[in-house]
Image (cartoon, rainbow, N blue to C red; front, side, top):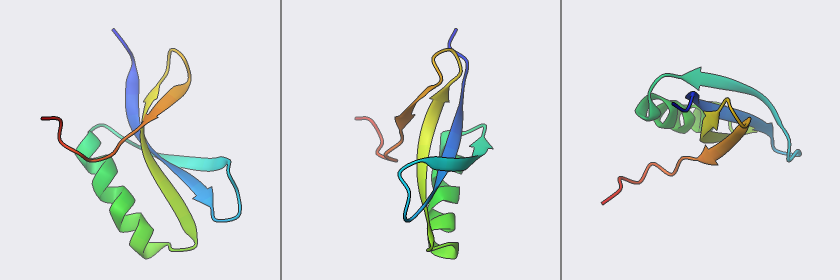
Length: 67
C-alpha cells in the first residue's frame, strides 16, 4: 500500500524551491484551500500535490475529474 497525503507546496514568487507546505487528508480540501490561499496571499504561489512518502516525490493535482 502506498502511503501518501495531499499537500499544498508554498513558493515565494521569486523562487523555484518550495519552502513549506500545508497537509490534508482529502484531495478536495487541498484544492479548495489552494484556491483560497491564492486569493488571500497573492505574494506566494501554491501547488496542490499528492505527496508519496515511499519515494519522497509528488504528482501535481489538477482538480479535473477523471472521465
